[in-house]
Image (cartoon, rainbow, N blue to C red; front, side, top):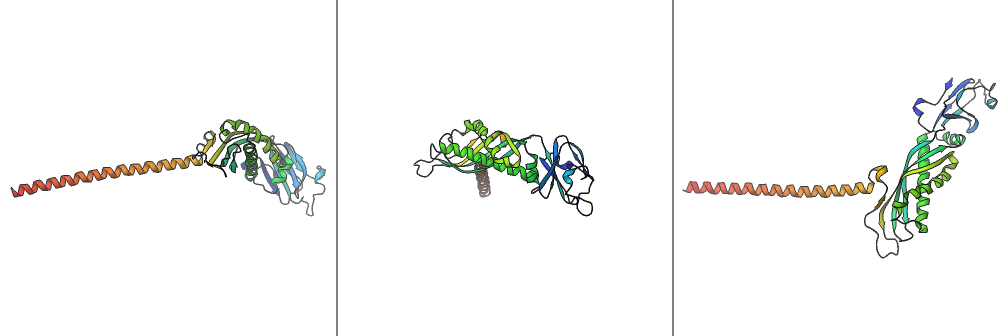
Length: 283
């Protein structure tokens, strides 16, 4: 029996192969850019680096206690972990309602961005993978931690007065640099490290006066840096829809006026022709 990472999962951070009754002598092929963590009952037995390996207690002492009646090794989980950097993964989400400590304004904030990720501990990654073998779900979990890190950094900066709503566009580069180590700290338990955050964008919706303020903030939401990453924000798309509806209403009014004018002209012609015909008959 020969086991390797499935071809359809080659581009994912990890792939899990569960062998329900792994026969003694099973061969494992590990590619140059990955390693394989062998686990039994959730416990890591060994890490296999690039090459071709044979799972046989006679040559692999770590399997000595795995042989079960029937000559097989029971259930083994083989987790193939890609050791290359994962680049430009998207993340985004709601930061919640934030308050500008300098002005007292509040707004509902959203963040978008991209990040680079380094696998640092394949065994830790494998421990997570055997409980949820879906690599997409793993990356979604990492993305959620990025959002939490952004919330901590941006919310903390606003609360301390070191950052203001109006100053967010100019501070995006600095914020990305602060989010990177905060995010790395939050994902360290999963065997990965965030190495950089880029294309950061923060959208402030429903910016308004906070409790106790006499004057409201700007009526329009403030969007910072969203065009390069996601085209237009949801708020801008909504605004475009309002403009389109207004344009359609204006066009309908113009068309209605034109139709009314044409009808008036036709009626006038009919009346004129009728009057002429009546005069002709009377004459």
